[in-house]
Each structure stands twice: as C-alpha cells, then as structure tokens.
Amino acid sequence: MSVQVSIKHGGKAQDVTLDTSKPPSAFKQFIYEITGVPVDRMKVMAKGVVLKDDTPWSKLSIKPGFQFMVIGAAGELPKPPEKPIVFLEDMGDAALASALRLPVGLANLGNTCYMNSTVQCLRTIPELQTALQAYTPTDQSDANRMLTAEMRRLYQAMGQTTERMIPAVFLQRLRIVAPQFAEQRPGQGYAQQDAEECLGSIINSLRQSSLNVPSESDSAPGGLVEKYLMGEMTTELKCDEAPDEPPTMSTQAFSKIECNISITTNYMHTGIKDSLDQKIEKLSPSLGRQAVYSQRSRISRLPSNLIVHMVRFYWRTDINKKAKIMRKVKFPFEFDVLDLVTDDLKQKLLPANTRMKELEKERDERRKVRKRTRKAVQTTPAVDHVGSPPPSVSSTVEVGGASAPVGEGMEVDTPNQTGATDEELGDEGEIRKREAEELANLIHPDLKADVGANSTGVYELVGMVTHKGASADSGHYIGYARADVVNSSGNETKYDDDHDQWIKFDDDKVSMMTADKVGMLDGGGEESAAYILLYRSKRFS
Image 1 (cartoon, rainbow, N blue to C red):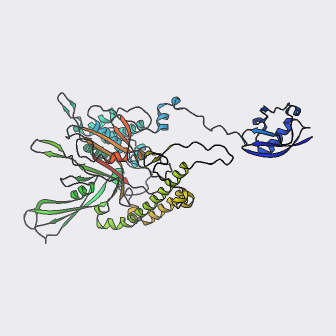
Image 2 (cartoon, one colour; image 1 turned 180 degrees about the vertical axis):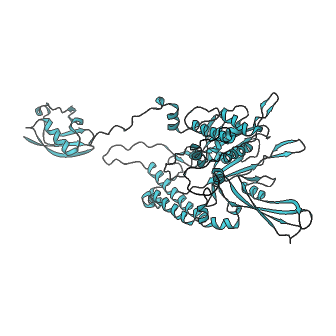
Image 3 (cartoon, rainbow, N blue to C red; image 1 turned 135 degrees about the vertical axis):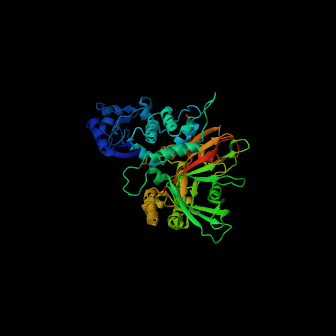
C-alpha cells in the first residue's frame, strides 16, 4: 500500500511516497538518498516516537499527509585533527611560551635596569636576531665575541620560557667589555649607569665580533652593524669671519643621531636639526686665529635601523654632576628624514618616498572601508526566513575603542553606505603585491645595491627606552617594544596594520599598553621620558 507523506529535515519539507509493504529500514534508505543523512546517524521521529527498523506501520496509524521528522547531519563526519590536541596545562615551558607568544622580563640584579631595558629594545631589530642565530664565536678569549655569544644564548632562552630570566652571565660579560658598568659605591652596591652608554657598548661589541647576516650575496665590506645600524654623515665647515676661505668637507660614520634639547625645543625633529646645524670655534688657517665657523651636517647614508638619542643629560659644573633636562619633547611614530639628508641622497630617495606616501593614503582608505563593512555585518542581525526567532544581538558595539549602546546617537554604516565592499575592493594581498612591485621599481639602483640601507627615507618607531627620575645617577630605565615586532613570526598576513599594541618591559614586570600611552612618554617632569628611540625602515609589502 502506498501513502503520500512528507519528511522534514533542516527546516524544509518534502512530499514523498511511503510503501508500507516494505520495512522501515527500506524507508530510511530512501530518506538517505533524498537528504544525504547516513542511516547510522539518522533518527526518524513520528508523533514523538522514534521509528525503529522493527516498528510496525500499523502502530503509527499513517494517513495521507503524515509528516516524519528527520534528525541528523548530511555528509561525512569531520575527520580527527592530524596532530593531537595539546592543552595549555599539559605544555612545557618552551611550548607554552610559543603558544602564548608572551615575551618575558629580565630580573634586576642591582641597578641593572639600564641594561635590561636596552636588551629588550634591541630585540626589535630582526637582522640582529637572524645574525645571532647563526653566530658561533671562533675565539673564546675575545671578550667582545663572548658577549655576543651570550646575547645569542640569552635571546634564545627568553623565547623558550614563560618565567623571568636572570641575565647574570650577560651582565658579567658586559662588565668585562665595559668595566665602568662594574662601578660600586660604598655601602650602596653597584651604581646606576647610563642606558645610552650601555647601548653604545653593546653595539660596539657586536661590531668587533664581525657579526653578519647569513646568506648575504653582496660583496660590500662590513658586517651587520656597519650595514644595518650605521649611517654616514657629511659635514661642511664654512668660516663666518673669512668668506673667501674655501669650505671643508668631511664624512664620518655614525650609529645614532642626537636630538639636542633647548628651552625652545618642542619636537624631536627640531632638536635633531639643531644638532646638525651648529656654530663652533676653531683655528682658521687663513686668519691665523680662532674664528667662528658654521657647521652643517647632513646624512649621506641611511641605515635600516636608526637610533635617536634624546640628549637629556648634561654636566653641570656648579654641582659637579650630571643633571637632567625634563622638557617635554614630542616624538613621531612615523619619521620622514628627507630634509635631514644631503641633496644627492634626497634626489635618490624622492621618487619612492613620494609614491610610498600616496600608496599609504590609498591603503588607509581601503582599511577604513573594510572596517566599516565588517562593522556593518557584525551589527546587522541575521533574518531566519523559516520563521525561527532572530539570534540575540549584543546591546553594545565597539566604537573608537569604547562601548556605546546601540541606537543612542550612533550611526552604523551599511555596505551600501560605504560605497564599496571587500569584493569590490579586490583581494588586498594581490593589491599589495602590485604596490610593492611598483615601489621597488622606483628605488634608485644605488640604494638597491646598498645592503642594509633605507631606500625611502621613512621610518617607523618600534622600540624605546625611557628614564624616570631627576638625575642621571639615579632614577629608573624602562624598555618598550611594539608588540607585532617582538611577536612577529615572519609569515603572518595581516592587512589592518594595527600598530596600537605595545609591550612595556619594567625589568621582570611585563605588561601591555596602547600607542597613545607610549606617545605620552615625552617628558615634562620626573615621570618616564623618552631617552632612546629605535626606528626601522617602514615596511611596505
């Protein structure tokens, strides 16, 4: 006997013919052919009763229009993961540190915050990490090489644990290389030291160790420090009192540029220009006496990593000790040095520099559209056309970093209001690939051939050391690093360019903070003020 019935699965009903002369198992096989739900995972309900293979049809009193409810998922069962799942509580220190990607702090061994903050800041230099991984000291009697080898071991250990590190061996090696850091004061232990002097000592040791980045095919002289951390300064001297005296030109290498701070300095850029343009007194060969000269210095080679030293300490002869300049000096997160370079270098940088800024504006527009589109999707409730109730929607959404109630004076863009969607914008990865190729074609051949040089003249802030207190002989140093730089795995694809998160290294206390908070570390009192700033070439890929 055949009866017209319906089966309902996944919110949809279908009319089928039931042959009651065949057992329920045959009907289940028929349902499988229609819905794709395997028989062994299928449950058929009829009037609240589960249809079993031996259930007699007469028990169900089936009439035309009778409805069966089919429960079960179509398709194959999900396959187990290729690798077994390991929970956090079952991981060792190395695996846990890798999973959480949390950087660790360094223990203070007695006024060693100057060293701890400097070591953390240097971790933001990717070429240094690469060079250290491949470094093996050839002469264990060389103090510089042993300090470099210990730096390699320390960084490796810091990446394999979630516990604070005790840099006792590194400190010992540092004091061998630079004995001034072993200074002690009667009854007070080891003396506080200058983080900028510590940074200079470490960089000098790396240079003396012939540290280099592996797999470099260029034949240019110099190692990691000379290529990636040192630039070249060209200086012109003109005698103000003897205009006919020919000017003298000279060049010298530098590992940092200084920002002089006066009573009129409000911005880092201004302080740097003041340090490059000065009046000095020297012996004039044409006048045969001391004369005033105008000294004008400009950068003729830009390294990939640029260190800026805020000159906050100076020697006061009246008290016979170092004093601190607490003036507020604003520093940029993006630093364009085009007006600090020689005319020749400026002409080489200009095409890529100009186009990079234009492309950055285009990226910023696409970024805004994508954020608005995502926000519109997240704030638009889905509609169930089958008649089921709509899903619950949170009463707050994130707006500019703060929660605001939905509907209270807040406008939400929808995809139609933005004028473009993700699909219309195109694949961001492909767009960026074309942009990077375009920019690479604009880089001057001389800059392409100069391994480790900045080829656009634009830098971005990635690390910093601050000083807290009123004098150089006391106070406290703290290190800061941009989170995406310290935690970078090198193979991530992120197009939001979110550089808002920073990591604060207060010795062994590690915490997160926003870029806005970092920007407030510009001085103006005894609180933490920027002292060393580490910039790297702005990435555009």
